[in-house]
Image 1 (spheres, one colour):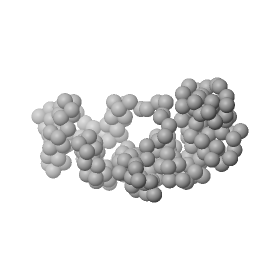
Image 2 (cartoon, helix red, strand yellow; image 1 turned 45 degrees about the vertical axis):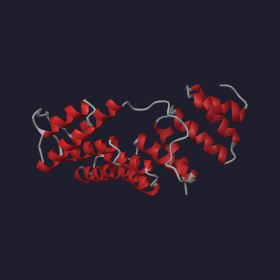
Image 3 (cartoon, rainbow, N blue to C red; image 1 turned 135 degrees about the vertical axis):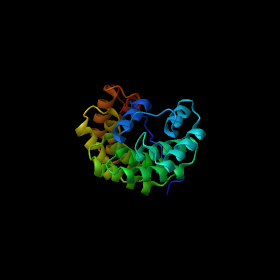
Image 4 (cartoon, one colour; image 1 turned 120 degrees about the vertical axis):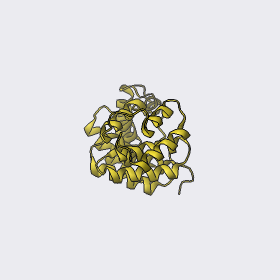
Length: 221
């Protein structure tokens, strides 16, 4: 059993910007026009000022009052994010679980819960959360990659390989998935396929793949 939380050994070339992710989640949870005098509005102001403890207070008040400026699911989701930012990961997981209960079709809460479980080193719980997300949206690339990383870290290479394969089928130029598949090929003793994938990922601009191509295959892109 691994003592430390798994952090992917390979840096993704592209990470969805926080603001874009925030906007997508906002849309999926169905927000309404903000009342600046309500607790939700005050929480947003506090978040914009990076005053997360104050935001937590207002979000809790909004939840208790069942304010209608936004959905209850989003209030729990947002409070989960504030718990993350203030280091209360166990409370964050509880809020993400409640957000998922309030809005069962939203992938984001399951994904966020899985990420927190990963940080806590609770890999079985992380997998359960990612599996729940994928039951809602089987082709979600972000979740597939997260699940594949956990599977790789827990020595479930065959299952991880299947997830990377699926990502590549959905997004043929996903250099992270191609490179990760290459490393599994290497562990499967399929060196030719490993080097072919590393070369492909390197040509797509993945600098880490280029380093592996040189050190593992003796090639340059």
